[in-house]
Length: 465
Image 1 (cartoon, helix red, strand yellow):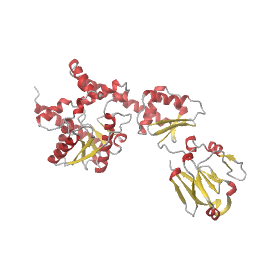
Image 2 (cartoon, rainbow, N blue to C red; image 1 turned 180 degrees about the vertical axis):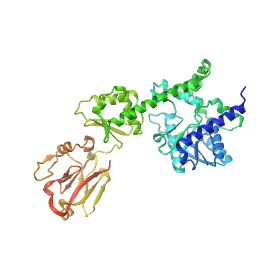
Image 3 (cartoon, rainbow, N blue to C red; image 1 turned 60 degrees about the vertical axis):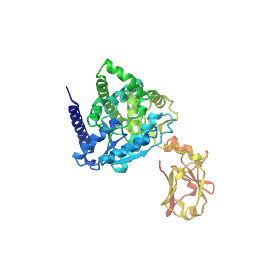
Image 4 (cartoon, rainbow, N blue to C red; image 1 turned 90 degrees about the vertical axis):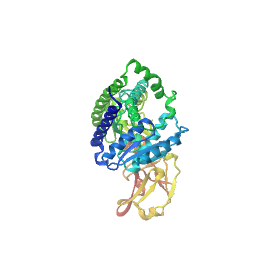
């Protein structure tokens, strides 16, 4: 019969081996600043914190306990006091942040609290310059996660469950921090036994008993029944997740190969991608969106994206809004833009005078006017006397770029220069006494220009997007 002491010894050895391997593999050079632990005060995080303290003391590494106060429980203040006192007794650094999860939107309380918690943890790691943060997820948590994803109809990525360690800049808001779960292959019972043997004091979150939350309902109602049917079901569910992780890795490797083939300049080659199956296109799009660090669309949403990008008529202007980015189709390319900016037509004209400055910044229009000495351009003294205005296009403006070239409307110039349609509405025009002087990214009206002198001014617009 295995005793609590033997279980305790096995758990400590396993934890030390796993964490040592993670550090050696990913953060060896940056570990001297210390290890962060997400510490709620509950059983799991208390066991994690104590194991980490033992591990770190053997290696003379500092430990930082980070507590996130969600304010969702009447006991939240008491939990904060408990965690603070515990860390004081153990003589380790403690930091706490209160977050607001009242505005949950479409996420729901659980998801909103999770997002705020991880964002706060990432901020604390940045503040303390820490490269590694640990969470107390264990094997039963992994089984819960996989079962939840199965109920949601998730694909390979969802059914892969949680990774042992990974970088999560979208979650933590910090690309330099490794998020690790060194207890992921240990059962909940092993943690309970460890806490019992070492007489650990921890808090109980009453919300864990509320079955209105899907995860709690699984833990309290479904998983005990599964355990009666198959005692080691959690291990087998986790094993399936590991198979899914292998499949996900292969899909990602295929997507990397495809992306390297189809990525041209600043977009994806739509023509070449048309030769792929729908499944392979979806795989590339998922990987591409993942590289942009945005939320994964649902299967139905991704299918609709693919149809718009690949099946709309050739002259259609396709723009898809997703999680803070815009996805455009233009000239047989799929392109993404991170900022959703105001169109120039919504901005009030700005009147100004030019006093010889080489650059004038106009944040309202997301760019700058550059005035550069040239042998072709407008007379500098003349330009300084003009009443200038930077304004949105109204439509119908016409411009001639050279004396021997015809006057054309701005739209035709845009088409010739292959300026993407979504950028055109943001580009301002420069007027001198109400006459069109310069069109952004197109050029200066030829009737105002001279040549053959070295003191002329070439006007150029530099967009900052």
